[in-house]
Length: 188
Ligand code: IMP
Image (cartoon, rainbow, N blue to C red; front, side, top):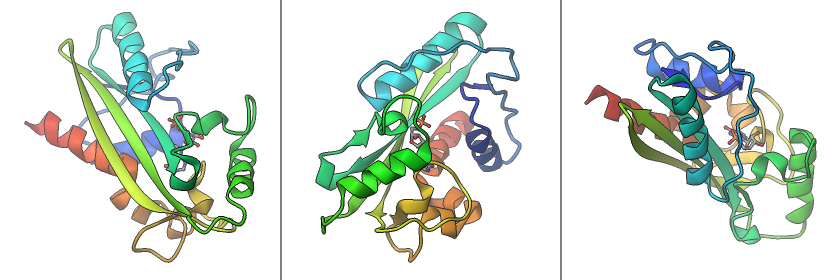
């Protein structure tokens, strides 16, 4: 099955969760170097857009994900725009810095990561959602992971996703929860 991503971190995370039951091929594995459009204004829209693009070209079952960090005090921003929060061409460091600046002096630090997976199987479309609630730290806590991991602390834990490490993150993350639903569906 094609997982419409070139993010090695994500491919590794999802493959680990599937426990080797399904062989995943990344876009690179199937030779797709296209810049797949992600121009919808919702996570659902973007995930479907990517999955449909791959399905139309390769005709195989596939899935795509889209993730956003939704911050309560910012009315759900950066949300679907999480990847380019600090502007086009900016990296995770700049995105995190912008978020920390926006939240300076704010006591409401509640946030959630939300992942939507769009699956196309035998021509039919399905959506799966995973959410992890938590809060935005005042300062980075470095470690493993990527993106906003150094500043997101999941509820019930003392440290950031980055400090907790991939093993813990893979058990409780937004993506883990969405993938669990996907795997449950595929098993049926
Ligand atoms: P995308 O949907 O995977 O492209 O992710 C959108 C943005 O959210 C990017 O800036 C990612 O770095 C960030 N992001 C996605 N998943 C995670 C995660 O598990 N931890 C931290 N940041 C993430």
